[in-house]
Amino acid sequence: MLTRAVHTATLLNRDRKGADKSLESIIRHWKSEVICLSQMMLRSLRRMPPIAAFAALAALSYAPAQQKGKAQPPKSLRLYILDCGNITGVSAANFGFKEGELKDTEMITPCYLIAHPRGTLMWDVGEIPDGAFKGDGQPAKQGAFTVTKPLLPQLAALGYAPADITYLGLSHYHGDHVANANLFASSTWLVQEVERNAMFAPQDDKAKNAPNLSYFGNLKNSKTTIIKNTDHDVFGDGTVVIKFTPGHTPGHQSLFLRLAKTGPLVLSGDLYHYPEEMTLKRIPTIEFNQEQTAKSRASLEDFVKQQKAQLWIQHDAKRAKTLKKAPEFYE
Image (tube, rainbow, N blue to C red; front, side, top):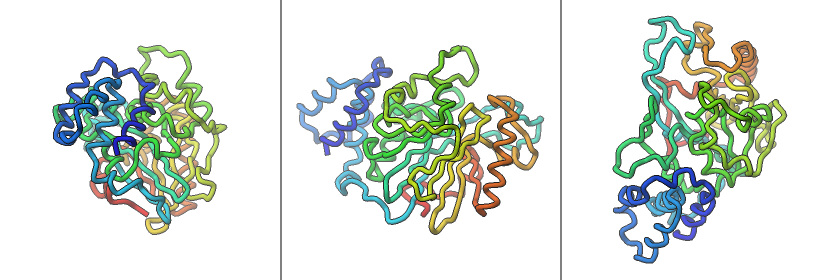
């Protein structure tokens, strides 16, 4: 168990961004779970960089899940929905709405684990890094973002560590979707060419929605499949397909899933944020290219009709209340 935790920590060792965060506060957060560790183990953890130590402790704290062994590949496609926070206090005007047209501006931020017989895909990875938790049991907050559960323990409860994730897919580079991307630098990153170029281009730090390199910098040297600004069949059997839907960012992408029992569905990324964007035909003012967004929406909506698929708006707080959360899953 400890070997696996340390292996996970080693993969994260390259990310020194959180080196100034208090390791002792992280240890306090997990104290009740690691009381059985020997003094030698604790000394080893203290010598690790804080982010690496957090990963090790997160894995150890979910020992019951780990004792069951590594999660086995499912016989058919599965979709797990993980809690990666919510967003409050946003301006409806930024999304193209007039006063009163939106009843509620709250958004939720899910992360998704897709388990396939041939591997796993992590789709979007949260709005606040796991390392930002102070270790006092309180939610992590950054501006309009609030996260109550770190991501790694949620994965560990399902029997997965970052090292078990075959592919990493990000709908786009905005901070509320990529905050834990560095934790998955050992996975193969699936990214549109135009999006990757934008992510690593010189940035104006004052620009709104500029890429935050501290969240995903480790991906620059990770194994990467660069998609030539088109759709991409992840496992080669048509059950998990990345759809190229640019506009919100230069290489924004959505995800199509063909589930045996649930049926076909599409995860929207940020092609939409609220259902009212569809019904009232509103396009946010914050788009990289509003015209591209309109074309991508029209194309995806035609695809959804052809496939007779459900369209899940990832930020839709109302729908989220009706959906199953991990450890339950869709298949």
